Image (tube, rainbow, N blue to C red; front, side, top):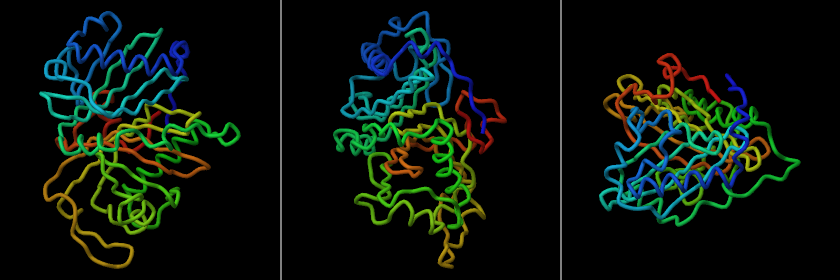
Length: 299
């Protein structure tokens, strides 16, 4: 595990400052006015591509969305918005990461997930689950490293899904994926049941695991990652109960994903992710090729 050094400059921006920076970005975006951020942003990407600030979604956004989950890392000056916007008047999932230094954004990383049905499902939830907003009692808070270690076991458990791994999942763990519960909650199976079944065998690699935001106060770890599906022989698997199955995509592709984990007492509870298919082997625009191909977590 590779830990990044603390950046004291970000500490001048508290939680309200960081979430305010997210809101100010969205206001500028909807106004089609990148000049509001002029002079501070050094790097801007959209869906893994480096662009000039003001390009991409800046041309096509038509309004704010109806769902917003704000995340803040006051120690490292990182802020993340997982929410929706309107693009060409169509609900669209939008993820925004800002690196804030001296109270100004210096890095802007965005995902624009153009899946109307998923965006509408996310908006139908109306507001983020309370588990993601509630602070962890001070005596039970875990270190940054411990939170990343637990969250990374989720990725490793899927990548090596033989049903025998270390799965630190609460019985009430519930995963909201593109606005739909795919484990726990109203879903037919729990997170732990899915992991123990071996059902994710077709995911051949989870790479470029960048834990860009950790919130010790709320027990949250947020990461960007890529789920590779190599297809071919990887589609053939044996579940934990001995059944032979064929599943997964019939051609190689990659899921680009943004995911946040709520961790309490060493176990994962609420999970929220948004994702979309991208070209197989695609990178994030924030990593070297070697980092992008690695399954090692970075934080």
